Length: 294
Image (cartoon, rainbow, N blue to C red; front, top):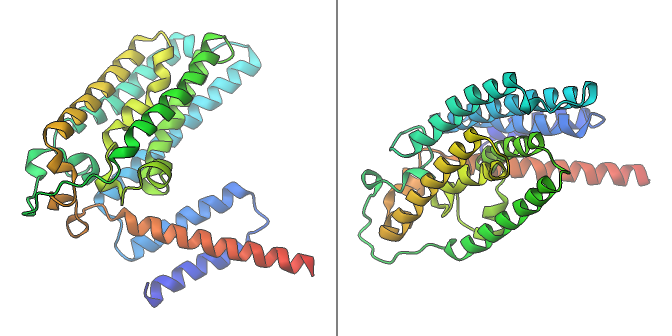
């Protein structure tokens, strides 16, 4: 970290310190903005990163709109708005144009996506001369699958019992869609706690994201939900078949495309800087507590 980058981070840490009385959510926003600005100043936000941020903003907006209308109608007239024709039309437009198109693009090579999902394609296989295929996170795949299926089965039971309605399940899928981008940009619990892969580029389950995202739609009787989930599982099946037929494309040892030197994403730097900001804020918090105790 050079002096200019350090000064930028210090300025934001001091700014957050002055706003310590603000709500927790506001502080989180400032942390994210600080990290974005630092990376922009260093020229480290690539077009792939920008694409991720755009998707994150769009998905947050969609979630906020859905939450607003869901709560508003539940409180005012007790109606599940997701059963109305208006919301059904909106869901078809928003979900199909955005998510279906995103998934269709995943079936083909493109430069806007992460190396994490692009490594499966033949044209992105760069031979290193090595033959030792190493997939460090392959052992945790089954554990992740079991945890995800088990957790969502609980939500499915609550839906079957009538505790959760269709609206809640749709909102849950929307939350997952935001979490998907958060895992890419900021923090991924699957990477940190289960798979222990180096980064998104080497992630074993990168193309599981849409299948995981739309899992809650399995429990609702909507044709568009089944189409979304079905497309997502076809995408995941293609990924798994490619992995078992061409495992060399998924290993950093044998595929130079996913080595750090060839990465077109550079999100690891972003995550490290964000982690540094968290540590500094934790230090500020501890100091504030000690000052209050004196």
